[in-house]
Length: 379
Image 1 (cartoon, rainbow, N blue to C red):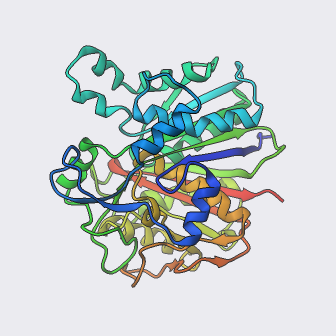
Image 2 (tube, one colour):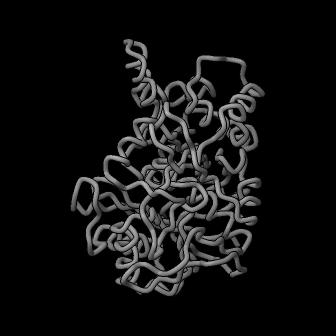
């Protein structure tokens, strides 16, 4: 019999708050972390993004460590993991793994022209620094696959637990807003000149953001918040930065995940989608959902609250979706006004009560990657 897999602990560090409760309270108030920034060290022109204040980050980190050697991203990741590891009571032994998920990691280290800075930019060094802080006994695992990285890490953890390699896996995902990231998306002409509007007729592109999120994936049902019941990841091999126009990769990912979960489309109560507010992503998602007869299922994008947090987005949005399910509340897709995709989808326009038993989380990213994971609320 295949092992069942659960998520027992969650946490997140975002501009809206440094724990899950404060993030949910901000979402219910309709607050957004996306603000206009004028920081010439990051970008010569003003830009909209969701950025964590350095003073708040450093103040929070000083409460758990006075060590000054950690990078900004490492502090964010440690802050996400620390209360979760403490609260879980899980022993960090040979049956407890650690997965780090990111797209850019400590890329800001490359601004310093030295051998040490070059080494610090390697993702394995970032992962080992986190392992050393908490004294994990296992070799860290790095998942870096564009913007599906955060949700893909849950898939990887699920399969490792099902293979009985581990009993518990701590997963952390994170990325930060940097000059490198901003210049890259600006070069694609993908950045919005206003806070992003996923699925809207007047959307003009992405707003970027930064965050870290963490979960404990476990074979232990006790204290479980949610069960992971199906997953799949498919690459559509369409283009270096553009998705398949027919949504083929996302279509097959969701289809495979539903098959593993042994459910059909009318059993899904809510979809936490990728929703970057770019013309091609939102259109592709709408097409894929219609091909699977999911066009009537309530769907939102959380990018209007957090911006696109890159490798963190899939895991951060899963953490929020778990709370959505457990509180039986559908959160608004902030920024949405008038439907701007060719196929009908049921975008959530305001917070509302709903009975959420099963939900789907999707993500897509550069290089044609697409991931879908299905979760079931514990009864």
